[in-house]
Amino acid sequence: MDIKTIELKKTILEDNDQDADLLREQLKADRTYYINVMSSPGSGKTTTLVSTIHQLQKMADLKIGVMEADIDSDVDAHTIHDETGVAAVQLHTGGMCHLDAEMSRQGLREIGAKELDLVFLENVGNLVCPAEFDTGAVKNAVILSVPEGDDKPLKYPLMFKEADVVLVTKIDAMPAFDFDKERFLENLAGCSDRAPVFFVSGATGEGIELWCEWLLQEVQQWQ
Image (cartoon, rainbow, N blue to C red; front, side):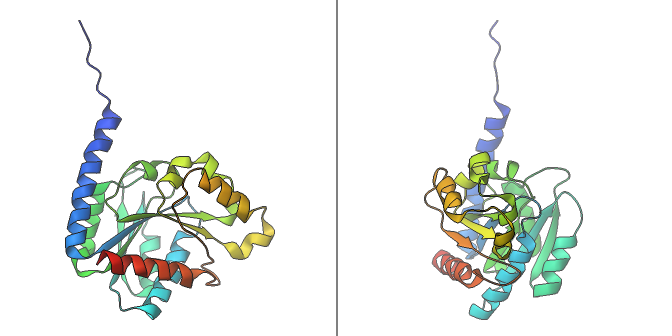
């Protein structure tokens, strides 16, 4: 008797990819730009988002929302709303280390994405699982902080392969760490040669305007 083998992970990923494509079609119809922000814990995602939103508010009249995904707590959602005034919702994954397209759809529905120009997803903090699941976002942004080191594209190639844009954060701390910009760019090129890279500091604001100019152009093209 032949035993049939079912590759469950492959099936799950294929189903999610199809669902993600449908979600993008809806976002396009609604003129809502949805960007998935991924990184490890402590990379400065929330601080960078706060600085990004403040800069965007100076540059354009955008309706912005943020979805904060975590296994538990609502600290980041409160931080975003309290410091920027934009709409924010907290998504609890029930122990899962990533978001998929259906989870995104639920969050987008709750935040009222149809009425927004730009929605950020701050995905669950790690450099492995989130890269495997298409959230339905228009683009993927990957954040790497200087203290993490310039070798991370070598250790987590899928994450950087999936990146449409890369932000290197905490550059104000560069003198204290052995982080080589050129070495990082070489390592990144081995995974992806298409992702623009912005070196930024959420604390000082350095580099944030250039990153926001890129993002604003993305939103305008999508709409």
